[in-house]
Length: 130
Image (cartoon, rainbow, N blue to C red):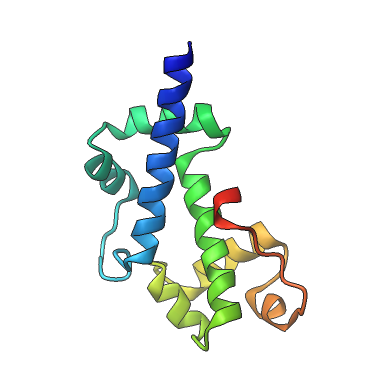
């Protein structure tokens, strides 16, 4: 029904906004044991299982996958727009280690962060297109 589709869209957009705010406000950087599912459940006052199901139906991907891709886009922006080291970027985005971020970046982008930085034609996506 139209109401169901509208609610899917609303939940999906609320999840995306919460993730954007999460990274924008450095909440991850200041948290030792950050838990995405708990954060989203608290922010949106809905069980994570339900959030996850509705988000996946609307977007064709999991919240976790969206979060990872979103973070990698943030990494690319930070590489392009700041003098932060890769280690500083990893810390700011809540990665436990630079090597984990490096593996995730390469898996998604197909090249290392170093190679990305050297490349002149960056392939960043608009955050609302993720």
